[in-house]
Picture 1 (cartoon, helix red, strand yellow):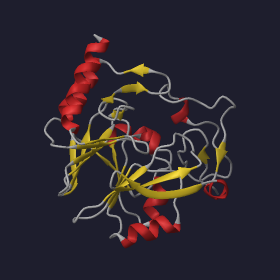
Picture 2: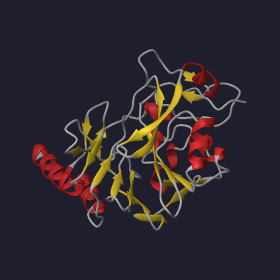
Picture 3: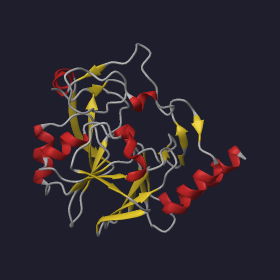
Amino acid sequence: MTCFICLQCGVQFAKSDTPPAHCPVCEDERQYVRWEGQAWTTARELADSHNLVMREDAGVLAFGVEPRFAIGQRALLAETPDGNVLWDCVSMVSDEAVAEITRRGGLQAIAISHSHYYSVMVDWSEAFGGVPIYLHSDDRQWIMRPHPSIVSWEGETLAINPSLTLIRCGGHFAGGQVLHWKRGKGNAILAGDILQVVPTRRHVSFMYSYPNHIPLNAAAVRKIAAAVEPFDFDDIYGAWWNTNVIGGGKQAMAVSVDRYLAAIA
C-alpha cells in the first residue's frame, strides 16, 4: 500500500495498491491536469530525485523542494515562546528538517492556507508524533488523505496559541486562511497566496485561479480585507522564496485592495 503523490500539484493521497484514477485537486478549475496527462510519484521516488532544503527567508526558517516540484511553494516555521507551528507544507520530509525543528523546540501544530499546499501534511504530522493539522472546515472536501491529526475548525478566527491566530479569509478557496503572528520584531501575516505577494514586494493581489487567470470579485476581496483589518502587522510572507512584504505590510494591504477594486470596477 502506497500513498501516491500527484506529480502536478504535489498533494498526497490515501494509501492504495494502485495510483488513483484522477486528482480532484488538479481537475478543479483553480488548478489544471499536466499537459502530458495525470501522473504520480511516491515519497521514495521523490527523495531519489529531489532534496528538501532549509534556509532563512527574511528571518524565518523556511523549507522547500529543489529542483522545483509541483507548485513550488515553501513552508515556514513560526517560532514562538508558546510553541512552534509549521505554516503551509511541502511534499517532502527529511530527517535533517525534523532534527532542526526539534532543536528549535519541536512542533506544536501545522496550519495550511489552502488545499494546493496540503502536500504530505500527514507525513509531517506523524514525524512529530501526530501534531494537529489545522484546516478550515469549508475546505474539507479537498482532503485527499484523511487522518485523525486533521482538525477541521469552524468560524472566522482560531487562536492556536497566544502568538498565532488563524484567520479565515476565503477568496481563492472558501476556507482559505492566513496566520497572524505576534512577535517582538514586528507582527506578520503568513499568507500563502490567499494574499499573493507580487514582484514589487510592496503590494499583494488576489485571484480565484492563478494559473487560469480567473480574478476574484469585489465582494470576495472586500471580505478578505475585512478579515485581516482588526489585526496589526508589519510584514507579509507570501508563498514562494523571497516573496515577502517587509515593513509597511498593513498599508501595503490597504493600497493593494484599493487598486485591485479600481482595476476591476
